Image 1: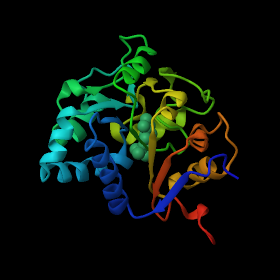
Image 2: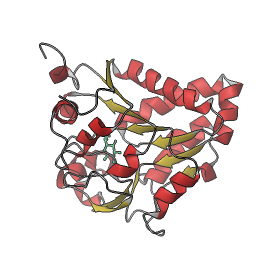
Image 3: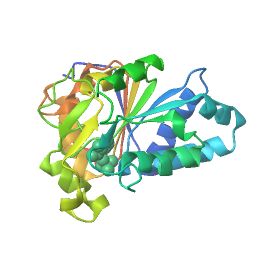
Length: 247
Ligand code: GLP
């Protein structure tokens, strides 16, 4: 039995799941102090495209964007900020520009600052209302690799070989993938009011199943989701096949 009974699984194809996630973000943008938690990676790209469409036709959402603060989950160490693969550059390109967020409202954990200062910055903004998440094929969330403490805070981490191999597709070569990153900790992520997890494709099936049905363990960081009171998982048929009857 999962430790939390408040995890909701919605099975939908990538387009529909992305629209639903964009609607949830839009709901936060309609509040007085919208604080969003952003992820990077292929699982969330279409969410930002859908949100940009929603915002372009809705003055109330545009006003929400002008009030919004957005906090990234993680950032590579060792890439110049303007490198196209840095998460700052990626989120400026995929989120801030299309949605209309001012660049100074986009925050990333930075190696220049003491890592834990990022948690304070999030708290000062009022806390993250909705945190988007992908899931690594090794069960990571953010860049919290297997072995991460479930109460960890924002910190510098070494990347797993499997994560570096998975992400090599963005860099063209494994050698070009950084060895380290700075990531919100698992404890930091669990502080967000609502978590929205996107998982697509059969490569995510094992990790997603273990995260939801397996024991809560540092060996599978995403299993910590079971300790959160409000989690929505949007997954396609392939990623959720072991979670469905007959799957
Ligand atoms: C990456 C990122 C995560 C992301 C996850 C899944 O390494 N650090 O924040 O959610 O792994 O990536 P993707 O959506 O590309 O499969």
